[in-house]
Amino acid sequence: MNPLENLKKYKIKLASGSPRRRELLAMLDIDFQLVSGIDVDESFPADIPAHHVPQFIATKKAAAYLPTIGPDEIIITADTGVIVDDKVLGKPADRQEAIDMLQLISGRSHLVITGVVVATHLKREVFSNVTRVEFDRLQLDEIEYYVDTFKPFDKAGAYGIQEWIGAVAVKGIDGCYYNVMGLPVNHLYQTLRHF
Image (cartoon, rainbow, N blue to C red; front, side, top):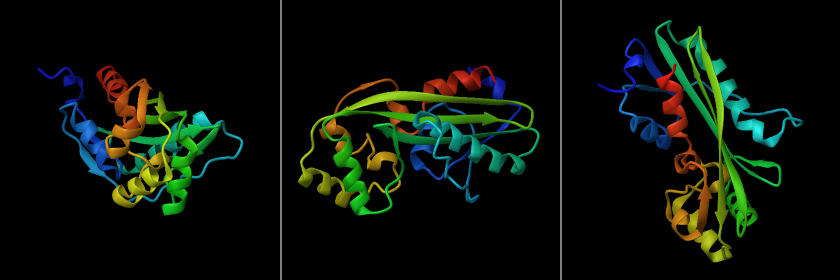
């Protein structure tokens, strides 16, 4: 019997356009439906601490999708941010911004924080997961090769740890690897198990 048998009474919906989040949630061996299409404003107040931003945005996403679900449905939303120097690096707008972001995190460590909301109309669990990632120093030609080849414009901090750059730049991580990909699967599993 699946340890997440308690979820059988629900239909689970993942509100995300991220193929990585879909793959990660599928690792839990539960049935779910991918939903998207609601344009959520991902802006945040200037005075909010950087490490609170992903949870703030995940909560905004949940608020947008909650009216679309039925009483027997669970909505899962998430947002991932890369934090360096108390600054949030979201998805780069273009090639130059991606290069700038990678130059900023080159040769140093940064935090990857994913905020997650699991909600029904009657219950809501909100949490964040933090992973520290240490990058080796990258040369400009390495950064340009990665950006031009892998086009990481849909990734916070302009990189995907599961891609080429993860192999050549990541010296170490402290925390959940899957969190860096966009969904802290262990933390989510524990939340769903007790939902």
